[in-house]
Each structure stands twice: as C-alpha cells, then as structure tokens.
Length: 203
Image (cartoon, rainbow, N blue to C red; front, side):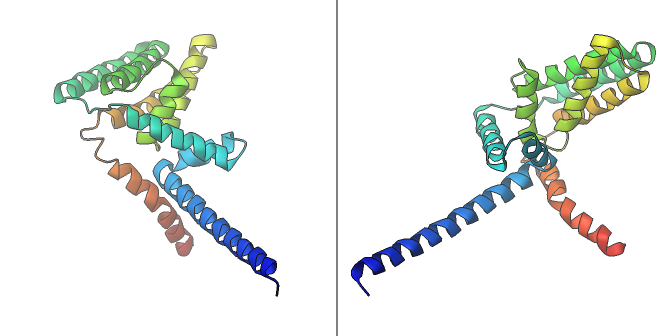
C-alpha cells in the first residue's frame, strides 16, 4: 500500500477519534447543564432554535452569575421581609391588584439587597435561574399575571395564583444559607428521574 494511503487512513482515524471525543464532551456538558438547571434547561431549549444555542445561553448565564457578588440576607433583614410579606398577604383580602404589585416590588427589593441586578425583568429572571432553577418559572408567571392585571385587570383567582408564584421565589430568596451550594435544589432536580422511574415501576 502506498505511503499516501496510510496517511489518509491515519487522518481518517484521527478524525473519528476527534469526533467521538467532541461528542463525549458535548454529552457531559448537556448532562451538567440539565443537572444544574432542571426544568429551566428544557424551557430554554424549547425557546431556542437549537440545543447548542440554548446551552450556550445557559453557559453565559453561569458566567454572568460568577461575576455577581450574591450574599445571603442578615437575620434582621429576613425578619423584616417576612413581616412585610405577611402585611402584603393581609392587604390581598381588600385590594388584590395592589397586593400583587407590592409582592412584585418586594421580590425585586430582596433580589437587589442580595446583590442581583434588577434593572430588566428578563435579565433578573435569567440571573436568578442559575441559583433557583426550580422556581424561576413561578417568577415569570407571577410577573406575567401582575403585568396583565396592571393593563386590563385580572380575576381574583389569577391574582391569588400570582401571589403564590411570587411566594415560591420569595421563600427561596430569604431562606437562610441559601447559597450553600444550592444543595437542596440540586438534590431535588437529581432525584426527579429516579422518582419517575419508581412511579412507573409501581404501575
């Protein structure tokens, strides 16, 4: 066999090895992002024109989050916010739209005090999704209902749902030691496939 044929074979083998290695790295990256973002991973993929672009966006969120100095609330601040939330819930009985608007503002206030930028809603949601992937969709839905109420009014039941959505993120944000290192959220995300398997086995 001529030497040039051996060269072509070697190049082909190297190309196959490189392709397999790249696919392995891509699979590991996908697995890591799925584990970290949970349902937010699927939402981002569905909203993107390709999985690659979606994963690049999630990676950018991680990099941006690393640049932020997120800090837990002090004990005094937690008590202050918890008392304020109780007042907002009481306000809901007499004035649901105002209570929902207050809940939206309070969540922004907590985020700001913890170190999240709050200028733009979509960016707020993207930033908080890195630390709280299980409840960020609650935040989006609560905000959507609050905006709809401000524009045209919403039913009391929809506003009640908005309060529940805001409360889900509020509880995560004021939780003590929430930044160490997202163990509860990540454990729940990791256990979800196993729970589904167990449910299927029982059927």
